[in-house]
Picture 1: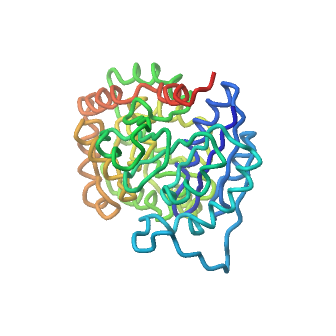
Picture 2: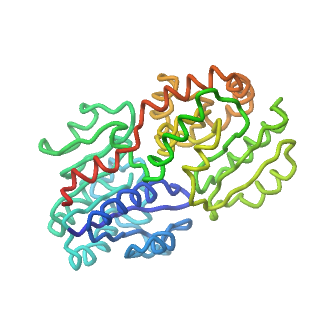
Length: 366
């Protein structure tokens, strides 16, 4: 079984799309699949990371100095069209010879800038197509569609995919690495009587707007427990990394910066509270029952944030501008053991960590 993933990472879009594809790719490879990636060489790409995971990578060059061709539907451009670094037609034509050579049984797309126009061009060159999405804002010619968001309904996609397409919707299909399942029991047991002693801050691998720095600025003036330890996790390509390191050294609480970690589940399991982005890492925190104060860093994260707040699995700070006024109030509430316990329980029942097994089973890997 040959599987090809088409996903990108960049300073603009972050690393989440490639990272969740990597989780599924490793599961499929473990089941005997021949897996490869097609990704564009944006600034902030993860091409070397994918290679380090021993996957074949086909890199699409940046089209610097070349005008993008007109889209098939210029009067209705996709909201994230500029994330592709090319027109859909250009991208598809660059992928065509690669797919023609590989002849994949499954093509998996995780990209907000790709829809049925791209898919129809390449349809003769793959057997089946799976789309990973969060937005429900465009048409797809797919066999399977995965949206792991908590609040998704069949009606959100029924008019956007073929009638016979299989819809995998909700957190039962959250793509979490096996390490989160392994750490789940330990993490939940240590939260039986929670005390706030370890705070985790994680705003994604890139954090282009330095939200981490803004959070640290506010926390510096908060009345935090003197023995509270702060851990900040960032990616090596984060443009504000050095500034955040300098800021951490001036914090009144012991503050450690960890870069390009490979044990995120262990770090989360040993944390008592997280301040984090309301993206796909929300499902990792839920699996481990980690209470969270959420910051919305992109429009597509608002759906996740609202759903988690409704279930009391997390407190919603809001967007970046809300951090100054809202974070001190929510930190004060989160210092309560009762509040931490309630959030932890609500989060833990949302995600059980077995989503990647459920998804891979639908790709018919034997």
